[in-house]
Amino acid sequence: MSHRTWALAAACAGACLAFIPSAHAQKLHASTQLHSYTQRNAGQQVVSDYIVAVVNNEPITHQELRARLIRIELQLQHAGQPLPDRAELEKQLLQKMIDDRAQVQEAKDMGLRVDDASVQQALQNMAAQNNLTDTQLLEKLRNDGVSITQLRHDLRDELLLDKVHEYQVSRAKVDEGELDTFIAQQKGLSGEAQQSSEYINLAQLLVAVPEKATPDQVAALRKKADDLAARAQHEDFATLVKYSDAQRANAGAMGLRPSSEYPDIFVNASHALKVGQVSSPVRSEAGFHILKLLERKRPSNDTVVETLVRHIVIKPDAQHSEAQTIALLRQLKQDIASGKISFEEAASKYSQDGSALRGGSLGWTEPGQFVPEFEAVMNTLTPGQISDPIVSRFGVHLIQVQDRRRVQVDEAQQRELARRALQQKKGEDAYRQWAEDVRARAFIEMRPAPDGAAP
Image (cartoon, rainbow, N blue to C red; front, side, top):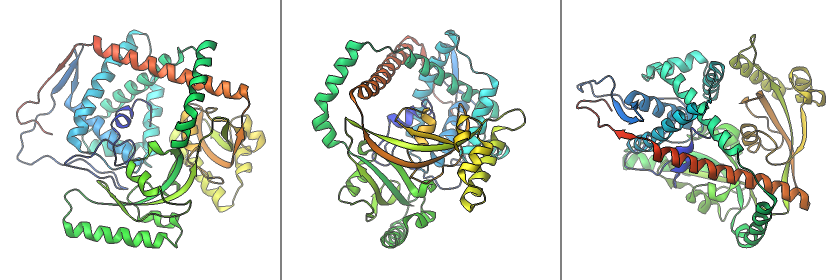
């Protein structure tokens, strides 16, 4: 999930699940299979397309908006999350598209560009994330009425927005006086803030409740959830994930993160749990959740968690597409799991960086040492676990976490970590101000849908 694509979802995260807007009257729930939105009434007049907004004389069409909605469906579904009310999401998404369109125009004026190869790589990555081939993804989108040309256009714009975000953040500079003030502020806040902020890692089983479920259906689903919760008390939680309507990767684990990043109902349900214990089913708009507390930690200013990690990285080239490279690494993962080859042997034979000489070992690493897409996956892995293939700017990776440890950091290390944090904060603040200025300068005209327009 790129920074730009999910800014909307993160901004309107509600009590149901992380990255999901607040629930409204209607809800569409994700399943393990991709599906289309509600079909048009057969008697409804068809309007092929129309303009919904104009940004600096450049139109945004209804088909563009619909294509983006279906993209969100694919990505949320890959993450095992339910969809919010479509009408509310469409309203918020249109505002986000207006912001994006103005920023894309500004980025082009700045001379930033995205090449065709990057767009193709993004398309292949989208297919791989949904366990589809390129052909299957395109067929799925065609069935949903999404123009492939429009999809490529959207991907190009998203990559361009990533570029302008990185550009704005990278311009942030930190002087020593600012750093001293920032460190002093953090020390002053450390007492109360650190006591009230803990990190938890939860795994979940979800029994989804469909839209407009009858009381009898809800009762039946509650019984299913109660039965699953009872089994989870004495059976391996990971073996029950196959019955879950949420994400099944990583045995349902959602990752070690600040409790504030979890929905309140999850935090409240896990508050009295000890590590390894399982909650009774808790109800949200999405359905019934059964939660297992995998880990609970309190952060400390003078310690950091280091990760011992290794990887196999293969770079797509003219002979091997990204999709073929992903398929190769999936097979390697299976071979490692079955004992046909060890991780070290596979890394030495296939990995295309200097770590191949060390069996893929990257050694003990500190937070922020890797690119975000690599580190985000690494942080969800338990020791010994191997990731699915993930794509970064350096190629396609298999990642294995070998161990973790919490270590003391000296004053110089604390200062460097603080410098990174302050630079990121200043960069994000500068980017937000730039985005607000771009929006304020833009000419925006909203257009109503014509009579008989399809939803």
